[in-house]
Length: 79
Image (cartoon, rainbow, N blue to C red; front, top):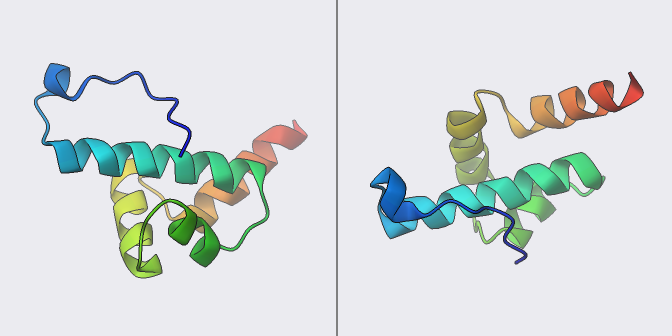
């Protein structure tokens, strides 16, 4: 997985697994914007075995579902 995040987990006092989840969700957000892959495929590509868990974690991090995020990112590209 390509990691674009420059976040140092120690700077934010988060656990390693929380940091990895954040990185995986960032990758998922990029895939939602840049591909037409299914959410199931994106979840798998980001290391989530369960699409529902990916969607729940994504919604918690981004305050919207993966589908809403994809729709919003596509609408913003049209402008």
